[in-house]
Image (cartoon, rainbow, N blue to C red; front, side, top):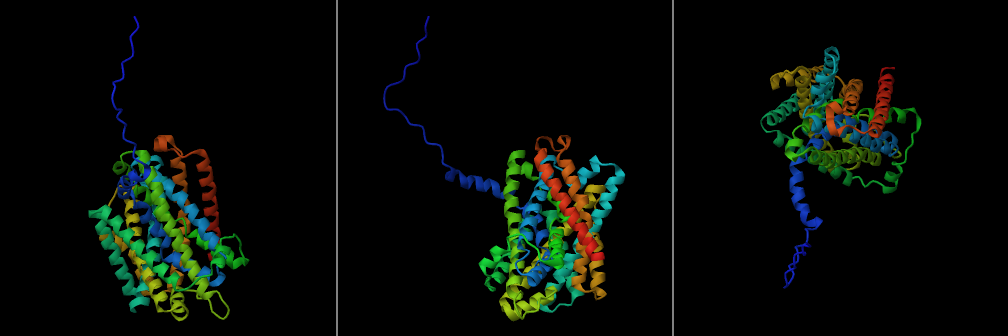
Length: 426
């Protein structure tokens, strides 16, 4: 027996409502995305710390736009490294120090902890000194009291994080935005030549001095403490996103915003210094104080004031983030927490001591960058090795091609930082 197909009812056909277009869904997607953003911006503060201010402005003042391409290349390296770190946190729900403790022998884990603590101290050294310089430039505060003020503000930021982690992220984002506004204000007072800026994007070097400065720019880019930190910042994103893939997509967007802004800020520092100082009859400054004074004389008080405020915000926010990284390091490697004020006092002590002894702030910044360069391979290599293990990251295992590219970049960064250390100590 053949069953007839069901008849179609007569009468007007009801047309199905059209599927919403992409623009109609965008607001909903944006609302879901916004709560997941922030970790990469917090990490990006390490890329606009006072050490970057010093390196980029000196490079621009002494070599013009020549090394602008180095900043672009260094930022692209940093994006890949930070993404691999963020992916560890999303995939495992643990941070890099915890994973090192769980998957490496105890002696190796303890060695990694010791060098990571040295990195935390060196990080604080640069950021406290930079903030103290800014307070001195803006308000005439002596360096030693200024360093204590920066340390106190950083402690307050960490207190906010302990009670309200999301508010801490939003506060850091706001301070980062302040740095962006201030540096763009300084840029607006200098009127750079677009043709010269475009020329700086063409790779090239000129003499040994430019090689050393290029090495310094690259060496200060991949910051070891923020590699540890980023994996911790993204641990909760997976739960908030409702899945691994959604969390990873959000982190790609977050990295584009955070690291993209950091790259722009570093480029602005160099472009400003090149425009103002790299011209006949102008003596290139070799310190942040000299850059500030030169901006006031040659570009006006607004440019100098905005630069100093950006430096102050950089010192304050990067010091708070650096102290947070120190807590992540100790808790992850040792499963131990110490009171916030104890942690703050330990990392602040070297900076306060050096400022109290009257050490040159520029020399202090240089020494801190040298110490940081030693810590890069200890953070970078575990990220690569753990990320390629399926038993650690599951379905988010790093593809062989990406691992190969990241491995080459890691080798380049390690070699460059080794060259920097040799050049400084020679």
